[in-house]
Length: 129
Image (tube, rainbow, N blue to C red; front, side, top):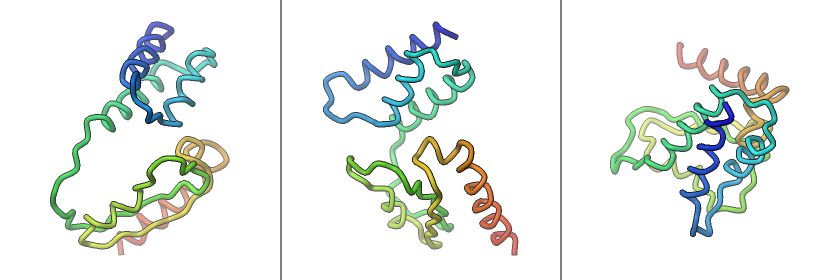
């Protein structure tokens, strides 16, 4: 577990080296890993995969034919170029925004995750109609 954490920290440092852009989520994750706060290895692998996918993602130059449902983290910091609503431009079938408590990380943790789950359930139930 410690080896994976050290590899993750080194990887993120190399990716961000020389760049003035920093990701608050990266800083949060690195702080957790450096402090060896008991974060398990599977979580580290999941976060690593998410961040890797984010780095490699190239959006299609076409519209998405369906509707996009976006869960907006109410308490997210916006000290970066906030382009979250840009998804609206490619959503040919509509774009719904649902504001939920927390930031990008804490919206998936107690107690916020319960409200996120309730909102997601309402969306899924509405999609079945």
